[in-house]
Image (spheres, rainbow, N blue to C red):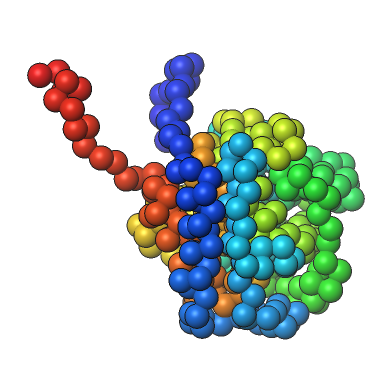
Length: 337
Ligand code: GLU
């Protein structure tokens, strides 16, 4: 698409959250009002994920000034899984820029499952977007570094900068997924056959499996999200991680593709960019305001945390976060009469 916006001066629309105490109370309420829900099922296609305690439930909101609100199991660690895709995309976008990554990896939703092979075939080998496995593998392959070790160091350091602490790999999750990820290996080979991966495809799958095995908590996700909400500056550490333009691009990709094939429903109900992962994490970004991280392992059939979506839907409404919501300008002065 030629959007014809080169060189145009940009302005940013933000707004503010309600006061600190109100946000705090509502974060706790988001957990309490959804705690009893037992809908959904814990993922088991990666064997170790089936061991997750389905009762765990944590919610965290981090404001762009670094203010932190927590409820429940917000410090419990779990593997980041697909949510890593958002941040690896941001790091790659920082390196190559808006147009190049859009061209190489794509931005459009497939409407199909995250690990769909037919989506690749239907699109003549194009990986479509960085939030499905095909696009994530193509994106991970683009990480700078002469060898996989260097690429891994850059991924680990980059995601750690988003979180504001050193994130470590869960060896058990990594081994469990590495032993069973035949489908991802097939996807990488298929991409190679279409000339969409120019590194060793199995090394790319290994790197991707490692990035998915990094341990985070709901609190980490909220800080990582707050960094994307804050024009790329981590509000807790003050470090600039990526540019504001990269944040804007990342959030657009998340809005279109972040909740698997239910991204449209998510946008309709919550009205914010988000990204879920099969271990039960959910990241949501309210641009210019806050990052929201939730953790609850029971998933809907597409792979999205059920209680995480409920808690975030509540917060979106009570904190006035939906980016599509507006109110009529009441004053007649403002209408020029
Ligand atoms: N590592 C998982 C996979 O590739 C991530 C899936 C997800 O969280 O969507 O199958």
